[in-house]
Amino acid sequence: MSDLPEYVTDRIFDAPRELVWKTWTDPELLARWYGPNIETVIHKFELKPGGEWLNEMKWGGKSDLSKMTFTEVVPQERLVWRQSSCDADWNAVANPMMPDWPRVILTTVTFEDQGEQTKVRLVWSPVDASEAEIACFSAAVDNMGKGWGSGFDIIDSILQELQSAS
Image 1 (tube, rainbow, N blue to C red):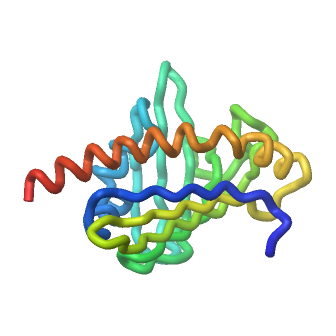
Image 2: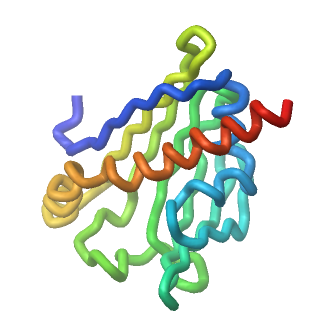
């Protein structure tokens, strides 16, 4: 067991795993829910180990860049990536809005059948973090559910659309 803090959330989606996976791996669908209530631009999306996902979130004249590097991709079962805030050249930098935010976050997302539904578990944890970064992450854990929950609500709507279309 790690002594590092973790954020863990589970969500049951009323859709088959294939469709839920699609909302996480189709860049057009992903951009609709990742970063809820702001504009999300996916500049690059290579769904393979070592592949990059270059993400920009825009709001009110501001922009936040992130680079995710996939370390594991097991279709319809598991996605793992390392995520960092970036500068305009996609180099990892300290988060400009939260300087003590961990420079690298490990994200693990698993997909599991629950009858005709799909359980998704997301685990977020800092990597090679300083004490200040660990403290910042720990302090934020209780509020992380709001953002992820809003995004997951949008996934629910996308899944309804996808199921209605088929």
